[in-house]
Structures are given as C-alpha cells and as structure tokens.
Image 1 (tube, one colour):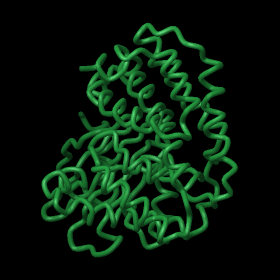
Image 2 (cartoon, one colour; image 1 turned 45 degrees about the horizontal axis):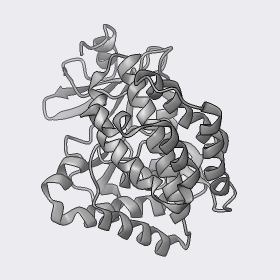
Image 3 (cartoon, rainbow, N blue to C red; image 1 turned 180 degrees about the vertical axis):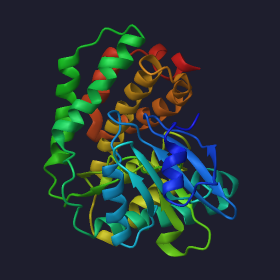
Image 4 (cartoon, rainbow, N blue to C red; image 1 turned 30 degrees about the horizontal axis):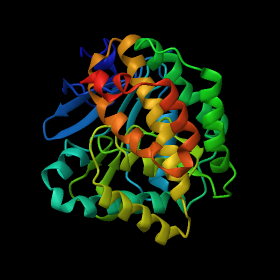
Length: 323
C-alpha cells in the first residue's frame, strides 16, 4: 500500500501538500484508498489507476445521490487522467462492526438501511446507467460454472444451468415493478455511520460506482443476505415487510430469486478473486455464501435451480469444501 508516485504533487496542487498519506483497506478491484491527514482535517485519497479503473462513474453517482439528499462523499479534488480523487472522509465507524457490537439495535439500524432504499426507489433512476436485467442476470450466474466448478473439479451441464436460471428469472424480469437505481454493492461494509448526521444522512454510502438500473429487490437482497455478516431471519423478514408497506410493492418472490442469483454469482466471483487475482482471503466467505444460497434454494420459486444443484453439485463440493 505505497501511495502512487504522483499523489504528493496532486495533493500539493489542491492545498494538501503537508498531509500525511496513510493506507486504508482496499476492495476487490484495482482501486486503493489512503487517508490523508493534515492537522485537524482529513480526507480520503482514491487511487483508481487507468486503464483498469475509471473514477468518472463514482463521481457521477456520488453527485446524483447527494442531489437526492443521501450521503455520498463530496468530491474535493480530481485528476481524471491519473485516476486520483480526493473525497470526503466518513471516518471508521462501519455498519457491520456497529451492529455486531449492538445486536439489540440490529432492527433499528436495518430499518434505516431499508428506508434509504425506499427513498432512493421513489426517485427516477439515474440517467445513463447500464440496465441490469435478464441478460446480465444469466451471464452473471455463469461465473459459477466458469470459475467455481473448474476450481473444485466439478463437471456440470452448463446449458441446463442457464436454462434453469432462465426459468426462475424470466418471471422476475416480467413482474412489472418499476426499475430503480441499484447501488449493487449495498452491504454492511460499504455503509458508514457518519457522526453528527441524522436520519438518512447518518448512513454514508461507499462503493457505488458500479450502479445500474434494475430491480428494486436487488439491493435489499444485497444488504439482508450479506456476504460478510449474518442478518437475523427475523430482521430480514421485518425489513421485507417494511419495504412492502412503505412502497406498496410486493417484491418477495423477486427477492428470493435475485438473492439466489447474487449469491451464486458471488460464489464464482470469490473463486475468481482467489484463482486469478491471488486474493485468497475471499475463500473464507464461501461457507456463509453456501448457507445463504441453500436457504434461497428452499423457496418454491427456485425449484428448477435447486434441482440442477442437486444433480450437479454434491454436498462435499459445497460449504464443507471450504471448512
């Protein structure tokens, strides 16, 4: 986590020449993050090196979210050619650790997380975003057959896998619910609790540069079936009911289908991060992902996919393979 060579000049050009640059945790992409500290002020330096990364989607989505009254980081300075952004620092208090330490308030925190989506989904989707629909859903689940299955030496019927998913997801595509802005990586490690903020502004949003226009159930599935922390089933059910009551939209069937789609994709993505990118740490999440997926597959709407898994992926190649 050595800062890019051009970072000091960038910071100096924008009034942060005397600042210390300290490493922050990265993510699953090529992006890296650093905390910039100058006396009693601090900010975050995002290194999004071209051609691997483009910071412009992050800027556009951040500005859109702020226009809606949500709390995305303010862009303090930018150098698009070198892929550098200086952005507002939301601090270190993440939703994940806070809820884990205050489990008696889990429902309260997730009510705010759900209300944020209600607020976002009441507005027209952001212009210019890619559409996340049946074609993308089917392509994404194939990461399981393309990465997970070869890594565990499982010989599977790929065509039958895609056909089973099409049978499950086509009704979701045609359910008539309005499409919304989907943040896509909306989960407890990308939601900060910002001191001094109230209401929806208390929740600081991160990692939304891959936003799409898609189904309103998707981000709820992302945050309630979290790859990194277990949400209690009672809270999950309460938040689905809360969303339905606030919006009048019955997303339950789509929720289980898209949760299963997302969890299947993630099983493949985490193997790809391990095999292709050398990020072995993602292997530890696989037992939880299987636990979530097995629960999703128990839903009646998932019968075709459940039958494919039963015929193609033995128990020894599921969660227990990673323990």
